[in-house]
Amino acid sequence: MTRKWTRVQDYSDEVANARIYAGFHYRFSTEVGKQMGRKIGELTVATQLRGVEARASPKP
Figure 1 (cartoon, rainbow, N blue to C red):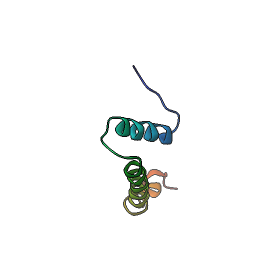
Figure 2 (cartoon, helix red, strand yellow; figure 1 turned 180 degrees about the vertical axis):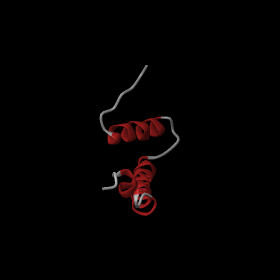
Figure 3 (cartoon, one colour; figure 1 turned 90 degrees about the vertical axis):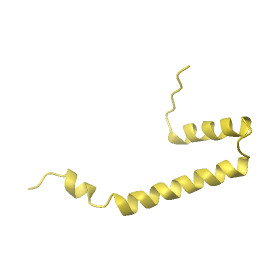
Figure 4 (tube, rainbow, N blue to C red; figure 1 turned 30 degrees about the horizontal axis):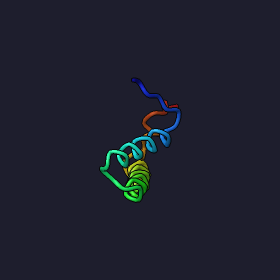
């Protein structure tokens, strides 16, 4: 079966629930993991993707 999501949050919630139902994690660990992932993503964008706009825009 092919799954499609319109929001990343929906995908993240489904994966978290599947890991809980399978017995791999508890609810609190999936919530902490999602929070950590968001923070890591924000830090990566803030520190590693600087200057992307300047390289992408055409020079006058």
